[in-house]
Each structure stands twice: as structure tokens, then as C-alpha cells.
Image (cartoon, rainbow, N blue to C red; front, top):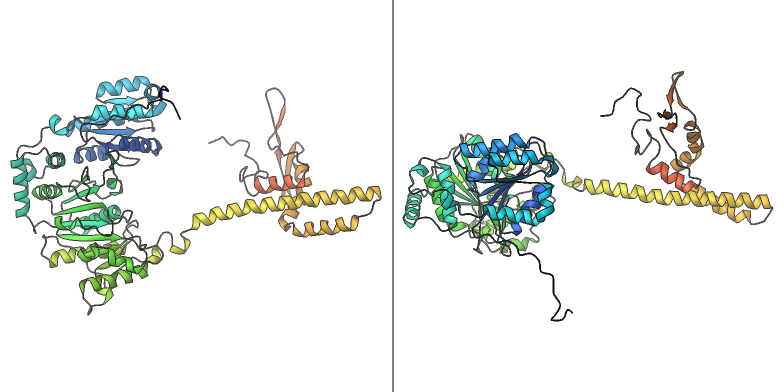
Amino acid sequence: MPDGNTKMKTTKKTYKPKNPVRFVTAASLFDGHDASINIMRRILQSCGAEVIHLGHNRSVDEIVTAAIEEDAQAIAVSSYQGGHVEYFKYMIDLLKERGAGHIKVFGGGGGVIVLDEIKDLMSHGVEKIYSPEDGRKMGLEGMIQDMVKRADYAPAKDVSTPKSLAKLKKGDTSDLARIITALENDQLDTKLKQQIDDGGDKLSGKIPVIGITGTGGAGKSSLTDELVRRFRMFSKEPKIAVLAIDPTRRKTGGALLGDRIRMNANNVENVYVRSVATRDNKAEVPPSMASMINACKMTGFDVVIVETPGIGQGDAGIVPYVDFSLYVMTPEFGAASQLEKIDMLDFADVIAINKFDRNGAMDALRDVAKQVMRNREEFHAKPEDMPVIGTIASRFNDEGVTALYYEVITQLTDKKLGTLKTTLKKAPGIRHSSPKTAIVPPEKRRYLAEIADTVRGYHQEIATQSKIARERQQLRESIRMLEDAGEKGKKALKKLYKERDQALDGRCHKLLEIWPTVKENYSGDEYVVKIRDREIRTKLTYETMCGLKVPKVSLPQFVDEGEILKWLLKENVPGSFPYTAGVFAFKREGEDPT
């Protein structure tokens, strides 16, 4: 234990932002290097930032649209694809063109972006391009904290919060984004907030609000995206607003708002997506959610979808805010008695059992349907008549998701919520996805593990066979030495030799038998192959500028048959199993390297 006079090392204090800082993070178009941006967004979260992560291979238009809809203070992009100058300049120009020049742009690309290009980009309007030299001076966390400091400003002060609802009523989503930010930060004018709430209340029932909730990892975001896609396909491109809520980490104050990365059907003008953090509120829904929904209604959307973070068994916090609720779960809920504890099964209008390609999905569908029937006390009905549908949201054009969409639109019509219609005709009898068309069938779900087990088993067999081959050689040599010396005891050794010889695999026998021939074939100047009475000769050496002959294939100088067999089974010559050195015995003489 250190005494009172010992000086302890103190870690550098982490910068804590004064305002809720929102970053949109992504890797640039045609760039699959997402390792660095993933590290950056994790550190941003630990510094207290709310991170809307888009993933890799994202275009300028996607990133700028997301930043405006999310009313973010900053964009952070990693670019290793070589087109960074045009990419970042276009991003700055597009932000200014769309009236969002206040959004700060940060970038990095290691040594790909050279110093002259960094100066050029920063003079064009990029806030900061971080170089390897910055990394050496500030360190990784230092660079991230520098980004947070630069982006730590209140958007409402830098960009005027709307003073009236004129633009909002005309469908201006930029005004909607700023109003939602002001509501989140509790900075919206009281009179304006009252106008929004009054206007939203008048539209109650005319614009349906769909709440999507469920356990964490159930696939809510993917299912939301697929439902949006079907609304667009079968309901004549309605205007859709999606409010995706994610939890704030209580320890750091940061949040990963990752729902947007699952959204593929939202990159059109009539779909608006906004990620929302719960902030200091411990509930699954932020306190200003009702006003946010009303603001979306006032903007003229035909339907508003609210997606909550993952919930527990006793949570049903979304129900008071929505007209229609969808509960998403997976087949892995444990024993059937666990269903009696799920509060949302009492309130949900529709239940989706997602990831229906997993084992036990049909049993789960039956058990959940029976529980819903008991909860509703509809004992005269059949379980298959309950609004419980099996879906696979990760599958394109899944019939289960289509059946879920039809159930939702039918119930909205029956309850006279909104005016949405559908051109889709009901497919009779479809209540779940077909497991037969799964990309990976349930029985093959462990196929990667099976491959790994096969490879490990192969290497284990090599170790066993090489040991047998070594002992076989040692016994053979011992017998020879005893015979040469005229000593007794050969009988016992011959018995052991026979046992080892029989234990050696037939293929291993063959490899050891032909090994002297292989060595002889590669020892000359030419390798000769006969094909249909025709000899094909290949030079076995390269001649250097010094006149030295370097072999194209160099064989190991092992004498131990165990080592020889191990090499033949693990490496071997080019053109022979396991093809470690290549699938062809030799390269063509006139073939250029790729």
C-alpha cells in the first residue's frame, strides 16, 4: 500500500460536454474499412456524446441527410479510399446548399490524407482532418475529446429555433428536426409547445401512431424498416415519420443511436427518421415524446412510427403514447410460463415472433398464441386466429413480414385510424415465414462451427498419424540394427512394428512411399510430366543476375518420417492437397503477377 507521501499517477480528466452533443459517424463511400470509425464512435460515447452510427460505404447524400434530420452538431467520417478531397469538399458544399453549414465536419484517414490535402480541405470548410502526427501528439482519446470540445455548442443558439409553425405545417423537416431538438433540451417556447400539443390532439385518430416495442436484440429496427418498405410499396408512398428511441448510458451520458444503420427504405423524401436518446429519464420513453409525436403529426405525415429500446417483461411504457402497438419478440423466451409475465402481451394489438428461422419457432408461435388467447379471454377462438405472426425481418421480401403488414393495415382500417389503404391482397392461411426458404436452414445453423471442428479434427489426426509414422520408422531402424548386430529381441519389435504399420492410414502410407520419388522429381533442372505420350517440361530453377540457380520449389530436408508426413499433410508441394502453396504445380512462364 502506498504511504501518504507517495505521489500516485493521475489520469487525464475526460472532457464532459456542456450540451447534449450529437455526432453522425460513418465510413465513406466505397470504403469497407470500418474498424477505425467503430473505435472512434465507442470513445465518443464514453465521452458523453450521442452517436448516430451509419456504418461503412455511405454516400455524402446519406450522411448529410442523416445529419440534418438528426439535427447533429457534427459529422465524423473515416476515409481510406483515396477520393477524400472530392468527398469532403462535396459534403461541405451540400451542407451549405441545404442550409446546414453550421454542422461541423471531422475526418481522418491515417497516412492516406497527406498534409497538403489536409490544409486544402480545412480551408474549404472542414473543421478538422486528423493526421498521424495529431495522433502522436494528442493520442486517440485526445483527438476524440478535441472533437467533442469543438462540437460542444447548443444547436438552438447557432441555428434559430422556429418561432412559428408555418414551415412545419408545410412539411419542412428541417424545422421539425430543430423543434424536436428544442423539445429534447427543454428549450422550446412554452406557447409554441402548447400550439404543437393542441394541433396534435386535434389530429388524434386521423394520423395513426404505431408503437413498436420488444426485447433487446429481437430485431425491432430491421422489422421497422421492412414495414416502412411495405407501406411504401403497397400504400402508395405515404409520408412516414420514424422516431427511434435508444437508451442513454447512465455512467457516461453517451448513447449509441444505432437504429438508423438498419434502415434501408428511408432514403427518400417522404420518410423521416429521427433517433432519440432517453437522456436522464430512466423510463423507456423520454418525457417529451408526446410533443415530438404531435410535432410529426403537424408536419403532415400519414403515419408516425415510434420504436422503443429493448424492454423487460414488466414494461409497457409506450402504450399511452400510441394508437396501435406491436410487440416484437423471438422464439427464445424460455419456458411457456414466462409468457404470463410479459405485460405487453396484454396490451399489444399484434405480436411478431421475429427470427422465425430459429429452432422451436413453430412451438413458440403456438405457445404465444395460446397465451394471448388466455389474456384476452377469447376461449371460443382458435390459437391460429390470434394476431400472432412469425417473421424473418432479415430476409428480403419475407412472406411473414408481408402478413404482419397486412394485419397492421387491416386493424388500422377496422379501428378507423387514418386513411391508409393497401393494394395488397391477403394471402389466405399465411401466419408465419416459411422456414424452407431460409438462407441458412436451422439444421445448418452451426455450419461454420462444423467447418472449424473439421479443420481442428484434421490437425489432430495429423498429429496422431505423424507420431505413428515416427514410431514406425524408429521400430524399423531398431529391427535393422538388431539384425546387423545379430542380437535377439527382434520378435517383440516386429510385433510392435506391425501394430504401428496397421495403425498408419492408407493415404499416409502412400504419401511416405512416393516421397522419395517426389524428391527425385524436384531435384533436377526440369520437371517432366507425360500427358498422352507428350512430355511437358518445366524448368525447376530461376537464374539470377549473378548466374546463381534458385529453385522454384524448395523441399524440406527432413529425415524423420513423422516430420515428413506432417509437412505433406499440412503444406505439401504446389498443386497438391492441401494446396497451401497454391492449386497449380507451377506458374506459367509468361504470366504476370496480379
